[in-house]
Length: 192
Image (cartoon, rainbow, N blue to C red; front, side):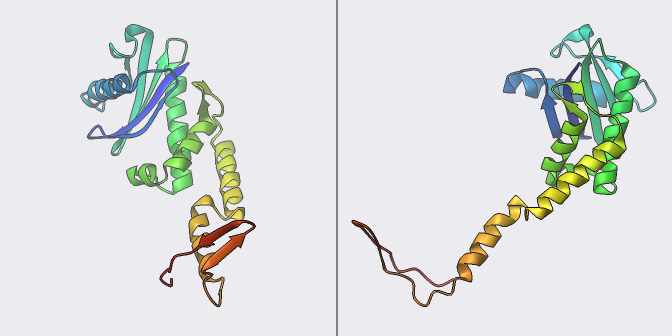
């Protein structure tokens, strides 16, 4: 089972953190630091598997990672997972990100965190691998994008609300609002 997925840059700044086992916030930060220290000091031409650190479970757990450009993709798994299978899963995840973002980079992970989490949830949920077919994952992401566009996107809602208020063309701003026995006096507002 996958216990955690960590993505951080060459300087140890976390770009995506997903724990599938509960750890307190302070412990998570220690795990991230220890994992970065273990992975970053290794040479690029050595094996991409190592025993989990002392904080994450020691020899019962394995860290499987890949280093792409400025990012480390690290999966912490228990002994029941295949190292080569997880290495292939990392490759599928990165290629899917690359296909969805057209040459994925660190900034894509920062500015499109919601989409990255959605892609990750298509691949892994609850520590279990759901999908390894990149074409199926991309198809689901494209379907999600179409749904968001048809809804106008939640991020566009505040701008649409302001625009609607501006376009109301009220001849005069009401000064008093009477609703039954309730009388509300509206203060003077500056025009938009």
